[in-house]
Image (cartoon, rainbow, N blue to C red; front, side, top):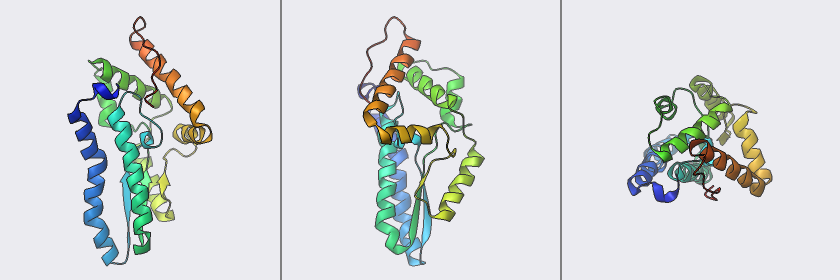
Length: 195
């Protein structure tokens, strides 16, 4: 999946689901929290908002926007005693995205995304109950960023990206090329820089 393969309606749907739902929720909840002296808002983003989701430009871009919006909300409303926690899980067991993989993907872009999700799942699927417990812990501690899985794969990838972005992008390009080659060994294009 590259930007050209995602229909405008896919971009609009991702924007509505991954960004605008946060905007609407914040518009309703934050004034109420501020009026009662404070509160906490949990924003569900994704590890893709800190890294990248191979195979889906709309998902990656809107999850990055969700993290940025959560940061802005945290900074802007701290004086009103409104805490914001942004949870960024990677490969959650039992989600619709993973269930769709079980049936197989019919189109090349979906196959590429399925491979990327399977690759992320190799790092270990996260249990939704464990994610909820970590989110509650982050809220209780007043921590902005919550990356479930402790010192798991997502946090290791984030640290690698922060330490050397160019090297991380190079590694992601290699992974992208391997995923493409696995689906079309004779037609694998060169790695793309859409990460």
